[in-house]
Image (cartoon, rainbow over all chains, first blue to last red; front, side):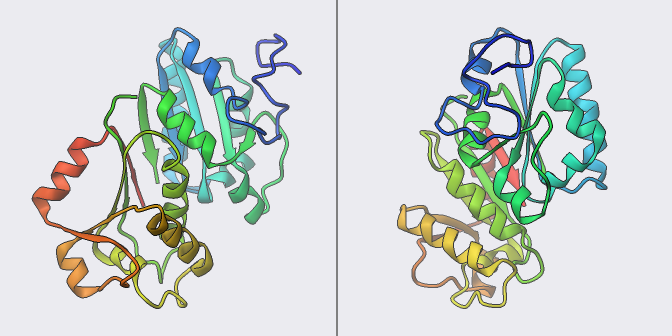
Length: 136
Length: 115
């Protein structure tokens, strides 16, 4: 399978898939890369002002050459219905994760560049990032 | 991450919002690692430990995950005034928390998630 940079990698499951085992969520490779990592948890729906704040933070983070790891949970999974949020998953230096349980219960379809996963990935993200912000 | 841990704070009323249930589910997920986890209940959030949760939003999710935390030995730090107003069921290990204690918990953690 292909990761975002076009390199073949077993660390990046196909978009929309669920990592079968710890380490398949790409966070191990995130730990090994050089830049700083900002972790963001977004739990509010797409119409909430938090979404614009998160988008601006991710842009600022990338402009500084840092990585952004964004996890959508609870009503935050509905942000995948926004094109600008969904597009983050295809950007270099950005990892976009979506709670599979939340997406299923809210009818958010799988697909696109986001990685659908469980809370183990959130735990890994919390541990992998240098700074962590929760927008709930 | 530093040796300091994660704190999940629940302050919303579980009868009015499903977010306390989601916060408890997240807390279970975050407890899988080596980092210490603190679960803090403030104000109406203390109702999440009530004996009868049947009227709560996402009651099944809330009950399942609060009991999973209890079985894992997770203590619940509850604002002392909220605990007086919303007693917890006997199943749960509860530690009353005053303002100074809350400050210590928040300052002592590296990651904070508030619902």
